Amino acid sequence: MSNILQAIQKKRLVVFSTVLIALLFGCATTEQTGQLQKSLVSLQSEILQLRQETDTKLSNMAKENEALSKQVVSIYSSVESRDDKIKIIMGKLDELEYQLRTYWAETKTILNTRKKTDNRPFAPQTPADKSANPAIDGKYEDTYKDAFETFQKGRYEEASKKFSAFIESYGGTPFASNAYYWIGECYMNLKNYDQAILNFQEIIDKYPKSEKAPRALLSQAEAFRQTNDKKSSITILKRVIELYPKTEEAIIAERKLRNSSL
Image 1 (cartoon, one colour):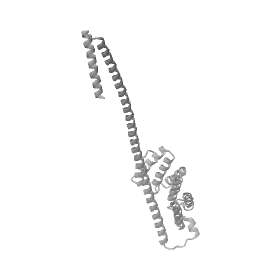
Image 2 (tube, rainbow, N blue to C red; image 1 turned 180 degrees about the vertical axis):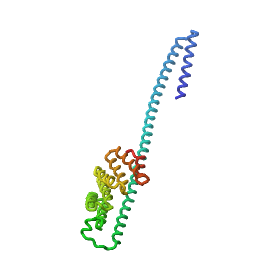
Image 3 (cartoon, rainbow, N blue to C red; image 1 turned 90 degrees about the vertical axis):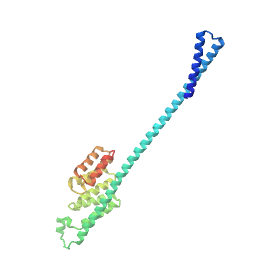
Image 4 (cartoon, rainbow, N blue to C red; image 1 turned 120 degrees about the vertical axis):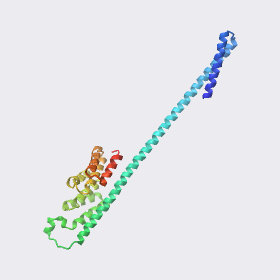
């Protein structure tokens, strides 16, 4: 395009130079004047054509630029979306890993408790003794184990009922706080988040020093997130860090606060 423009500029210079000389010396004939007019018309036509070509090319360039901008935005959004998905996946992996460790610890606790029960010296108990202290009744381990195994099999409604029955019969045993926790997890799996929140709160209120308390808070934060209560979810994650620092739950809570778009 620059070459065409230079050619037009040279042609324009020649035409105007010829016109100027003819006017100065008054020697322009009718034929020369006609030729000059034709040259001017041709020059104007070329300029108009150049302008049209320039406008067309500028319009095409603008469209290409807009298309490129859209591609850049699309690529950026894709990368951003991928990063968000990675964060979500990493968070879920953390949750699954912790859940597996929790299941294993729970199973070991049941086995160890049962082992101690089986190895203790035999001492016949009277009905009065059992009613006075339900924990002496060796059946409470079996009752809890049955409820926990039901949960592991994914039968959450049934497991919730069994854990509730356990609390009614053996509320004074060391497994009571665990039972509340697993009821909460049953409701989480059933997507009944309001009931999950209430059961996790039972642990926080009644058993704040229980090993399940920080985990109950973490799960409660997730339940609030699922109900779109962003403010409560963030507040509870901060409470996990504040009340139970240096715990694994606190580490997970910190990661959730950093990475989440809660």
